[in-house]
Length: 210
Length: 210
Image (cartoon, rainbow over all chains, first blue to last red; front, top):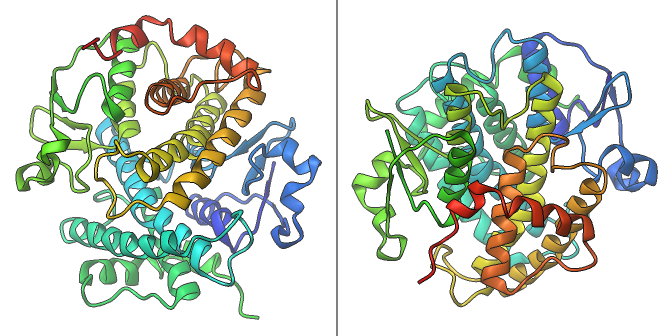
């Protein structure tokens, strides 16, 4: 079993945080996106939409999509539980995982891809107006999360879950890449962020200093 | 238990197809989006991001996000199974459910919202260039699905799943709203579509003729 992608960057980092929480060790194989290594015919056989991460199983079966890969590991090793313990909690984790993806991670990705001069050429063309609209959305997503975290310890309730991983990974990346920090308008989000950013899974997967 | 949203339209229809496949009957309560009924303070207490569908449980607990609501019903009544039967199949269903959402449903929604004069005012402003870019993406998504369906009976493999529901609901909506039809470039997708569009769950949830 191995994972194509970087342990420290982008969506593969979401998987590496997840695996660190589970205490599962899987080798990562670097894929150089700037050199287009994700677009070779060999790689496209593993990943039809040219994405990382890819989880390759021992028999050559490949899984893509971060959350699908994480769910596979949750199925193989349920504890510690990161997708919820009861039917209702599993639905609430999925609900918040999706709310974070669509209201925070997605807008942050679109903002970066369409505004930043440092974005990889992942889009056929940058549309600045779309990028700017997504900055507004991202701030709305932070407000949505702040309101939830006024009531709960973690994003989906009392359990640290994959929804926290998606939110943390987005906010740490944003802060580094865009000079965006969680401000005083979002005190509950600040408080939560201070806690989750000190978890061993966050520290072990932080990009090494150059 | 009740669901806020229309049994026949938009994301709530995804839930109603899912429930029809399961043979579960839940009352739907109409929400008039054109009148802004999803933005009243009362509704926002149920749905913090002003979305439909919302599943309200007997004790007042509310769940949003289509796939989270479907997963809750899968947990309550596992058969017939629509999220996969084994750990690997569950990961593959999640993988394809997400590939369809990000490569077909998402682009179709963005295209419609940013190009169509009939779009509800869901966006602060329409960005035509973004809408047009998503038409290209949607066609790429159809190609991705066509290649998969050359090898498998259903989107995620041998099992009809929530990934088929998301793909079917998107393509039927597209054909109706945009004059987009699955063309001869995508013969496997055409073949699959002809089959799934005749399922009782598709027929029972099709909007009634006016």
